[in-house]
Image 1 (cartoon, rainbow, N blue to C red):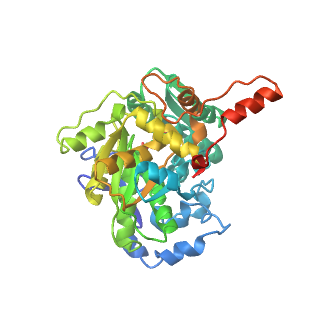
Image 2 (image 1 turned 60 degrees about the vertical axis):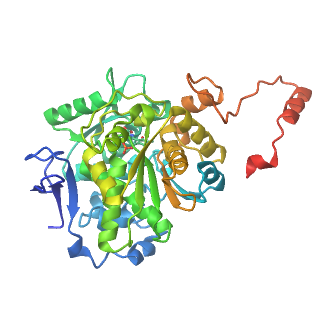
Length: 435
Ligand code: F0G
């Protein structure tokens, strides 16, 4: 029996074919457990290094390259893949200098097929939906999960049903859900309420739920760690820095890192730093209270992707923090947008929530928690085109309560040669702009 579901609180086990999202005995979150002992032999850095650059499915995917750790034993024919993953790891000295450290690697998960890391979880989630014979899948979303689910559902011939907060979704994400043919429900409720609603509707109608409470999502998202470590030639950085919303990614990172240690791919664990927006910081508050009494918050931030006040993966994220001696930090919308302008300005770009990784690193360096000489791997979670309104409003200084530190102002110019030459002479760059 290679894989099973297991409660993270009471260790109750369930067969992998069961459609459940919480323990029936105690209500705890579920893990997918694989029997690595039975599979230990094929799991080595050589196996994964040999697959690099292959055109052969499913190993051409940056998720399924690690199939033995993601979902061993399943028939390759059942896999729904868009060759997700295979994202770049950037070394960006100017961004590192902004954050106050010497060595910063940024892994750009916005380079996935639908522009966010969600594709890594959707390939495994929709594959499981297909294995279970589902024809309808659903999620509540701040936009990226829905964009990704809509794409993978369409590829698998399933109906995608998405619960969106009215008026609060970035345009790039909304456009994707509609374009990929999902049934889009705009609901007058925030993400946290939509999450409750989609759970009820899924149960009532027998629709397969593909939010990150579904443990198969996290099995795919673990591969961000596998791939990053492979790109670092299996050398462990001191820190992994990641934005935290519903806390699926942070939970997946903790599990993936521990499994890599267990099977001997790495020899120590990095420390995890989870970064939240100040206006959507329930984990940050909980962390600072020594994990005593958890309180949900009413979320508000310009980083709409992480506008979440009651994260479903809380217990798994706490576990990941404990395993990795992790920390939680918060950053303001101003810090998020300024860090984004720096990441955008070096020609890489990301959506607002992603910039938490850099803004949070900077703050942790200022607080002396991350040291200048530490090696940091930050995750950029979404593509710059996801939220064009926020980017344009920042550079035009149109965001309330925020003054852009790095605005690139558009210039209105008459259709006249002399006028254009005059304006360009005024805005000649200095060499330092390009370092
Ligand atoms: N960054 C981006 C770009 C996201 O879209 C999300 C989550 C996060 C960070 C936070 O990740 O939830 O695993 O802690 N977006 C979800 C969505 C909630 O519906 O697209 P998390």
